[in-house]
Length: 146
Image (cartoon, rainbow, N blue to C red; front, side, top):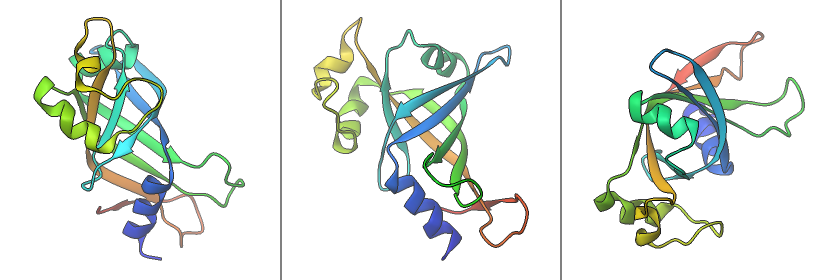
């Protein structure tokens, strides 16, 4: 299988990922998030602005993601690791995010994401994608183009 296709299949067949952020001091944090993808493999997620990962993103947009199916038997699975940047969407960008993101967890109206105490939309723009090289005998990551 083509390595790029393998990475795309993994991204499209999952709905959760692990988001890694860091404070301006470099203190790391990892959080599981529910996500949606657009046609360019940008990620959308919602979170409260008070969440630690949201506060990290506000001061340090550099993130890492890990997307994988945790039910794969040991030694047989693959996943996608991503480096990129994240930011909170502006009011004018929320309608675009709603084209991709679906949830029954919160109301899916733009107004809901503009309240002072509510959730906010975030976008992750990947810069690099990596997978475990399927043909390697050892644990070897390779960059793939998406």
